[in-house]
Image (cartoon, rainbow, N blue to C red; front, side, top):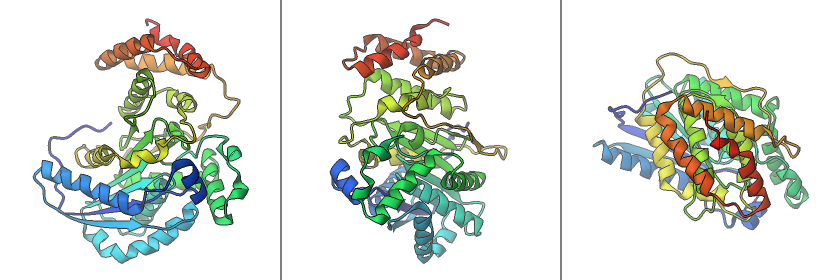
Length: 371
C-alpha cells in the first residue's frame, strides 16, 4: 500500500474536470429531488479543495476548471465528452496535475476518458493523475432495482442508459470488460483513484461504489456518512474498518459485499446525491493523489473476475464467515486491535428495532468470539 509523504507534490498548473452522473430525469426528481450534482459543481468543488490544499502547503497554482456535460450511455458519453475536451487539450498537455471528479455513471466515463487520453499520447510521464469516483456504478446498481423501476416510464434514450447500468453487474459483459481494461490502463500510468461510497445509498451498493473487486495500492476507498444518517455507530465503524483493511492491502473477505444489502437506504433517502455536497470528499481525494508515495514496482491491477453480485437468493450465512475471517485480519495486526475493541463495545450496546436489523446483529455475533 502507499504511505503518507512528508514532501507533498509541487503543482504549478492543474486541470480539474467534473463529470456528472446519469439517472433518468423522472427518477432523479421523484426519488432524489431536483438534481444539483452538475459537472460544474464537481469541477468547482474539486478546484476549491485543490486551492485549499495549496494554501496549506504554501503552493500557488493555476487551476483550469472544465465541466463536461452530456447525457447518454457510457460509451456514447465517453466519445462525445472526449471530443468536447479537445477544446482544452493544450491546457491538459501543459498541466502537471490532471484530476477528474465524477459521480455515479460519470465514474466509468471519467476512467474511460482518461484511459483514452493516455492511449492516444496526450498524457506525459511526469504528470500527476487522479480520479475521484463518488457513488460510482463500478459494479452496477443494487440487484433487482431494475424490477422496481418501471422502465416504460422513461424515454427510449433514458431507458437504454438505465438498462446499461445493470450490465456492470456481470463481469463478463462488454461494459465490464471495457471498464476493466480502462482501469488497468490508468493504473499502469500511476493514476491514483479514490472511490467513495455513501453508506445509505439507495441506488448503488457499497461494494459497487468502492469498486471492491479490484486491488492495487493506487486504489483508495472510503465511506461517506451523512450527519443526519441513522446508521448504527457499530455498522459505520465496521464498514470503515473493513475499508481500512482493504486500503492497507489485506482482504475484507467479502464483508463489504455481504453487508451492502443491509445498508441500502430507502428509495426516498438522499444517500446517492448527498455525497457530492461534502467538501471533505474532495479534500480526501486531493490528499490521496498529492500526499502519498508511489509504487516502487510496476504492480498490475488485480481484478476478481469471478466476483458475484449478491442476488435476492443470496446465502445469508456467508456474512458470519466473512465477519469471522476479517476478524483474523484485524487481530493479526496489533495496531488495529483498539478499533476492534471499540467496535465490540458498540456492537453490544446496539439494540436494533427492526426484524431485519435484529437478524443482521445475530449474523454478526461472531465479533464477540475471542480468537
